[in-house]
Image 1 (tube, one colour):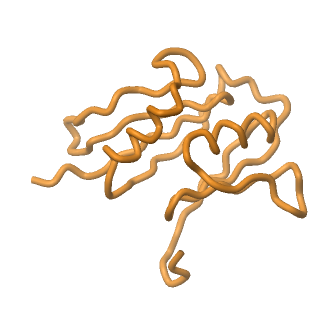
Image 2 (cartoon, rainbow, N blue to C red; image 1 turned 90 degrees about the horizontal axis):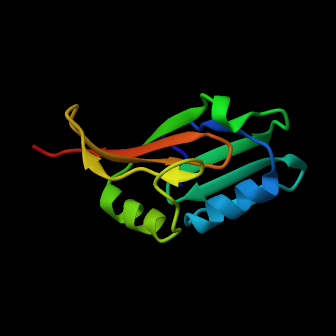
Length: 125
């Protein structure tokens, strides 16, 4: 990772570090719980980095947590996520990859805790 760039890293809630770890490893991320704090986890996939903290009282259906991840090759990441065999309804789920009218090609993943990850790339004109 390039230490010479500015970077924003989302910090998202989860009820179970084990469930979160299993979910994100299945999506092709690496990482897991922090060695000094088992209530915190860090996952990365290439330059994408996501952090999670334990929030036991979280109600996934009421969660409004999420982030947008801009990538260079959304089709490749979508294919990787499809291999996880997530359903396309409910929680967790994967939404279809589409060209959006606002100039992005994107899809969404909702994890078991209701965190919404929108993932996309700018459509080249």
